[in-house]
Image (cartoon, rainbow, N blue to C red; front, side, top):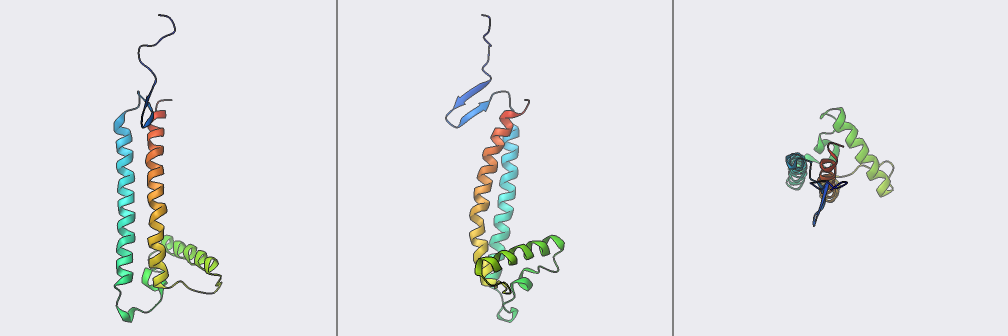
Length: 134
């Protein structure tokens, strides 16, 4: 039986190609990490949207103050600047400021690509797991 191996290197299943030498627990571990990240981001977005919808009237319209962009550290400040710059370009208002309502609506829309990226990450985890050991 020259030229044949006892076990196939790859098994084709309805879910795709799976390297039979890759440990399944690595895939599950990566999937769990993606689930954790997705859950935390979704929870943070949902909480922020809730706070925006139920803010006290005396808070005022400033989204930067509502998001505490300046006092939340350099990463939050940079993220706020990026969002504000995008908002200005999208609305054609080079000096404008997004309102709390804009932030709340945009956060809701932002959940869709977060979900999309989670699915892509899980799908690519199975590919990395199948390439482990190569």
